[in-house]
Length: 344
Image (cartoon, rainbow, N blue to C red; front, side):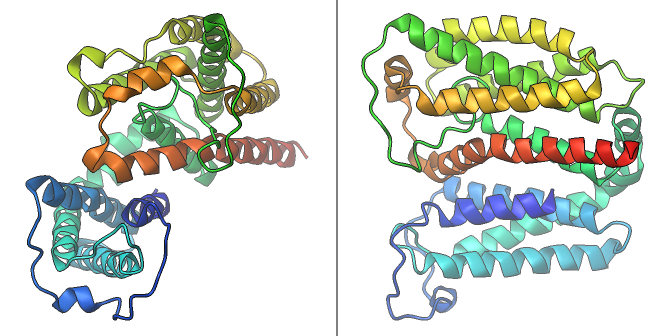
């Protein structure tokens, strides 16, 4: 989780990673530069909030090798080094502006997170939360990676530009192809299959991680409900209040109904069949998303979305959304290979 979070922070800080150039100044010149003239409370809050989880996760990841003051110091020093390096990288990007205030806020956020980590480490690493995780899921590093993968799936629901549970859209990174005009029913069918296919695939991945004695169907219902809450919260924060349920289109409703019915039945399949079915559904949904023409109805609803301060965050969610199904496919292959090794 720490490794993944560092990658996410790096991408968000350097987004859009275009137009690299050398202006002839030291990349660390910003440290001795004047205090920025124009900054907002939002900018400070974002720089603080972005590094709070980093400090907390670092302290938890170090436990039990390092504890107390040593873990706090390593977490803050690591965050400071990361912030200094990323701000230096911004010196080569015309769209970004490195400042010493950003570094100060980042380090302060990491220190706050590390302090919280000191308080919550036992709860997470050796307390009730750890015991619940041990009872709910199988043990091992493979399961830990799977849980991080599910966490990233929740994260991509924060992008209002994506279809419900949709992922793997590479058209923003490749040359888009304009499709011919389609009837509304065509887009409804695509969204329904995309929603249902990804929902069932996530449910099957979850079932492969769950402990044998756990009620997988209850876990699937809880995960889907939580994902819908995240999607609704994203629309409530990023868009106008009247558009908070704009994601609940006719296609999304069909996909939810079909996907839930299929998922609750499919978790009873043998483990190998579940892994194969999840891989096939991920591939089919990803191919469909990339071959389908842009949905004009989705584009119309997004006209009310002013990205503003969330531009970098949106770029991050788009990247994770584009990569997620391919990472998930690799993970499914890993799970299948482990099973074969255990049988052999």
